[in-house]
Amino acid sequence: MKIKTTKLYNFIQKITMNGSINMILLESGEDGIFIKSKSLDNAGVGFGTLNSSAFDDYKSFGEIGLGDVGKLLRMLLPVKRLIFKSKEIIL
Image (cartoon, rainbow, N blue to C red; front, side, top):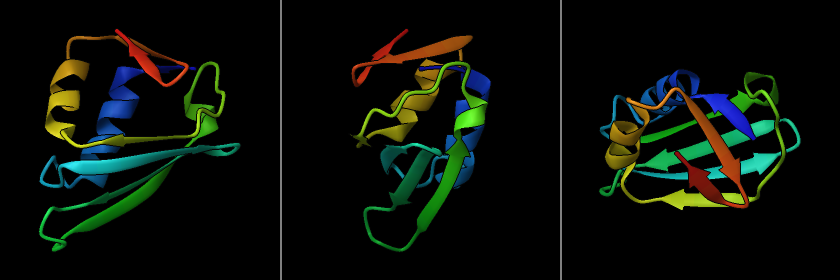
């Protein structure tokens, strides 16, 4: 599965309210990726879907939980294209 990092970065930024929510769950289905996020104190919740058409080569991968979204967003900035393969992120 391949995607331009700017698309994924902008989507995650919106869902996590500019990184103020630090935990997300990525659920991959036939239509795309559904992301749920919530703050540690349960004061903020975000969710949204990134359609499969946003990806160059989309395949469902199941679920991935991330506990430090800020670190992921910092890693995405210098990378132009992201490839997901077997629940691993290859940079």
